[in-house]
Image 1: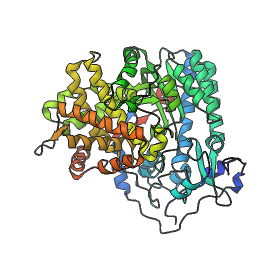
Image 2: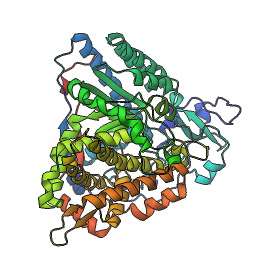
Image 3: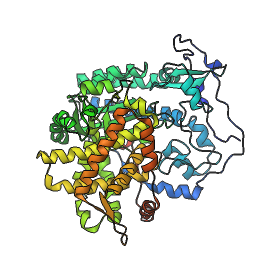
Image 4: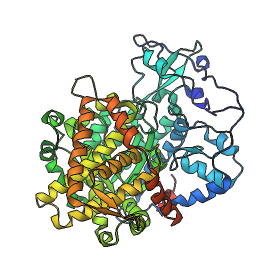
Length: 568
């Protein structure tokens, strides 16, 4: 038996690669060799079938739907096509995260374990530090299916391949065992052609010219791996009532280097009324950048002024978006050039946000927040904290001060958690500054602080493999050191200290922004290792949440049937 069942099914789809950085040569798929594996006794799963059955209750079920009555028949057809396109990201993400989905599910006899594997897009529990729960499966490989299983970091670093760190290439070995790169659009050609066709059909039904242009350009991008033009088109699209986010976007799955993007998707229906209320905040981004609590050189970049804020009802999540902890807001594009020229769009997924607040945040607060501060936990504060987290991704610095490249490249596998941590802490900074300006109710600022602490306690339950959870643990431990909150030893409940939390917020903001601007990978890794762990006291408090049967996150009932639409 194999110690680590790392399927080579991706290799069957590969049709071209570059074997030298200066002279890319086509290599047939027959010449590509799977990575060697080691035959040992297969391990038993860490989780038993009975434990897996209990873990299914870690997810509260939420139905993803929206009122589509304002859309005519053609627009509903367009939405159905978008849902089909979004659904195609699931198969691609399975290939990136595990490999052959059907082969894995076929070997699982227990229905609950099979269901859990489908939720996790593989045999590792994404909400419990990637524990394997299928017999014969070892630890989750840090590089997922982006790199050969036998590749060492030294081999990767010494490889002369120019595009080895590119977002949209796979690393493989040729018949001689040499590392080669394979572009996504070649590796996944058949699936991407189908998805592009669905987007083009949807574009024909789009009434909004900007949305039609975006869909067409995004279809082209899927087949070329050149996404920048479609990102610019997406930024220019302001008024369409329907949206889709689709493609290889975030790099969370690549825990080896944080270089490779995973396929994901969202289909969204715009809440026009809420979006109008949010629009006024985007104009303050340049001013807030200038006021960041850090040395001037770390805030010299000027964020794009074309950013906007909108609220949506999510009606479909696919691929990387649908695994583990589900996002409640989106800040895109990730392309640093687009961000500096145009800014970003911040999409608040209000129906998913409301579900998490009702089913998870409130029950957590009832268990762990001091009685007299529970009144400060409000949905408005949760919405604001989440919204400004997304806005704060546009603050700070995108390129290192040494001129050697982006922060994302410099911080490697630490980049995602540091960016999430920066956005969390600067989101709270923005709330406080906007309250000072009178744009938010300053008398309610304590609500934001208490809700922020409850949000940390919610997010650290996602597991150490999650970028958001790592960021939250660093912040929790830093705040604890600074006295931003206290814990009553008798009740085990937490209480916010307003003034000390404000000071801690500014201190941590400066630390994270400085490490990012310096591109200091060693300092980033050291901070995560020192402050990214759950201590025994917090572990005991989190155990109380499990004993109270409070869900860790949510799963969705979604699709055409839920929306009352028909497959075309």
